[in-house]
Length: 299
Image (cartoon, rainbow, N blue to C red; front, side):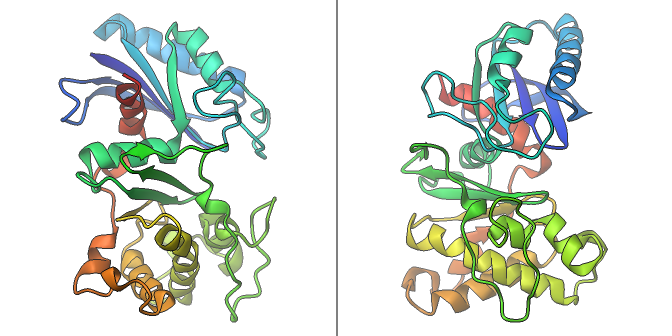
């Protein structure tokens, strides 16, 4: 089976044609391409042109999976699900992304948030393989999390918004917060743009001993508390451009242990925290593989 997979991000779309031999084995990426995220109509048109060329070379796809930036409006599984919700990205608020892509490619799309898709893929083939309760958190331009609970992606009236939970302001931090909606939520305090604005330099340029990294770990640890206490998850996969920074996972483990204060004995056992917060197993292809995983889960 061939799957047209799209990781629709706020700054770029990753397009791919994947081949699935078995649901137990990660799909093989036959070809992929990145295009910038422009206004909706021009982005969809560019994706349609690329897939038309690829289908001519490899043959048509059997399914379409879309892992999209959020928030997504509507209720999962109901009519209207997958429209882009409130966003500062010009032209995208309210846009019917699955409808536009489905019409352009002639396929009914399986659609979910990019982090939900990545969580599903990490559970099927990556760092959370074999677990029934796990979370994928990406920290980059934004902060988001996909939740697998009891073996299935978690959906309620909407999708989980782990990046917009409020976090207490650290006593040595007077930064207002980057989020245009909430100010000092997890995304507002710990996203890549927040780090750059607070310190006057992008995170990747800061040395390993810079105080930014400990502050980042403290905010992420606070944001992870609901994942421990409310979801009782078995594992957090920490990814994204900023989330994958060297040494950050180790700092977050230490700070999270402090905040748990012995209340969660299973995470106090030797080696438990090292197995609880881990790096992605699928690397930079988690989003694209996640889009394919959505079509497999949809049957």
